[in-house]
Length: 305
Image (cartoon, rainbow, N blue to C red; front, side):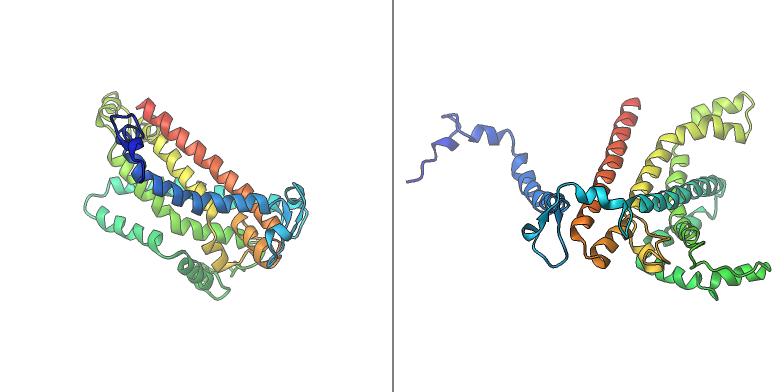
């Protein structure tokens, strides 16, 4: 017969422990599922990054090479350093333009009373469109006889080869600005609407104009929100694959080979699963580092307020 004395509260079994910690019954299954779906693949990536693992070959039948895959990341057809540089140019270029445009449009929206709802609804559209659809649409717009060159021709500007090596990264920034500036607009507009009135009224009583009010009061109050939005966008840029792949597939050549595209090429084109795993693990570490900064900043902001 099964002994159930260990569940008896009077005999000091496990029942008192679980009675005070009922939440374990709820988070336990979720933790197990998360562990299986997240940490086991991560473990496989770490182990695979230390083997000369080729596509279609079992992992543990592959040769153990230690850290050689990490050392050789910059010397192959796909270079981690070059991909990181292109991702940085693409990311910070897009981020700077989106922040400036988003803040400017958000300020304009605060001064629009009747039509702000209509414009807010319009700004949501680029965000909710499927990334693959955004990429394919802009691939047509950026072609030599596409919409962008047609608009330039109206102003008597010569046609440009937006799909060529020289302008590919620039056009990628253009697409990203079109898609994600509304994200900045909506978040910063909401932030401007919730700013406290007292410091704004106080500086205006002292004779400050609108420009001085913005730079001395509104912008410092918005700064935590701006930093949070920028960190979220950086995390999105690092994992952005769909739009880049739909337009360029990392080309022409390697001119738009961002980090996610480089990982895809390593796996699918080069068939080097071990090298691709090393590439992926570094990308995961980079994402964790940015997430760590984001979480710590949120904690400091919460303590400050």
